[in-house]
Amino acid sequence: MQLSEKQGVVEVKTVTGSEAFQEALAKEPPRPWAPRSFVLYLACLVGFFCSTCNGYDGSLLNNLFINPNFKDFFHGSNEGIWAGIVTSMYQIGSVVVLPFIGPTIDYFGRRGGMFAGAVIIIIGTIVQGVTVSIGNYNTATHQFMGGRFLLGFGVGLVASAGPMYVVEVTHPAYRGVCTALYNTFW
Image (cartoon, rainbow, N blue to C red; front, side, top):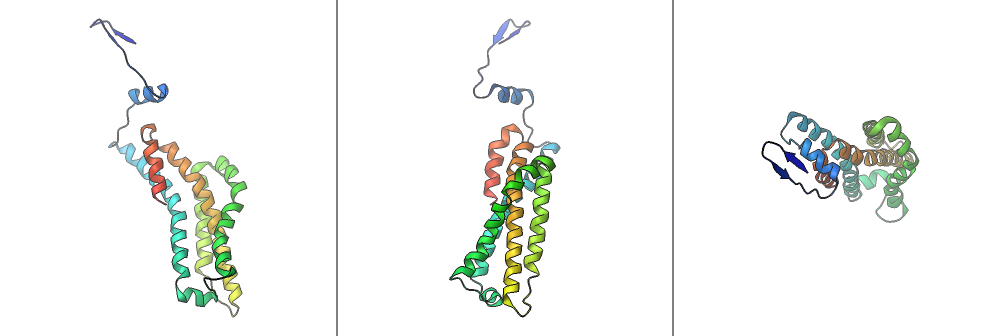
């Protein structure tokens, strides 16, 4: 309750939800068109791309399995264990990274965790991209699966650091919207 001495009027404000949040919004309302806000939007966009890493790989691999040149190069098929193990190496990498996520993000921070994961993703992409068949198709398949493992390892790291980073850099008034946008970038 505030009393204005000049007017002799008492002003009553009803606050719903978190009082601290409402008080912060009253003291410092968001300015969506300020230059600093655009810097935060770009920072959020970097975090959004952490979600894109996971969705892009899933759609890319599905398209590879219908490509006859891909299956001929690796002497694989859509039936049996070959397709299953090649696909699951990504998820295996995502599971193996679990004990390393917390310490990495705590020690290096959210941006450091996203950077480390991105470096691992780039290495995994290079390993997959330079896969060659040297007389033995098993060598090529193993190299491709190793790249898939590294991709899963890196994506597990960025997929954990990205949403936390977005929530931390977003203005409290926009956190719900930005978190929802993060998920739409998959």
